[in-house]
Length: 194
Image (cartoon, rainbow, N blue to C red):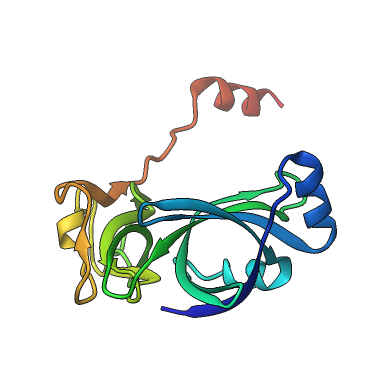
């Protein structure tokens, strides 16, 4: 798991106008909440935050007016067209604290020979892990699987200290037989007329 340090500034202005001014200054408005305290409204450096959020479940070390706090992203709002960051919600965490996060499911290996399709029923798994040891992803082997085979959440190998936070019988991946289309009679009649 990667950890990124960011310098944060508290903010006192709120609303659309203030948020626009913050974004024009290449910063991102954010709110930090958790541990029963009042939410803290901050601004973060836009470019550094954008780079940090490329890593799934990144752990952020925030320096808020000389006080260091750990946080993980909970909600990220991006502009629908241009993709720039509009606002970020961060959850305060402590070392050793367990948190629920979603991790991506990656596959390795090849399906059995034949016309099979791999369906990702769940592209992410909700797991419980220590805040400072959140896995970026989990990897599942699909080597040699044939039609009708499925991989359940309980079959996914998880890193040490990580547990499932969803139903263990939830289907994550399944293998389907490819459907082949037979040409219709109308299509064959048209080709003979031409």
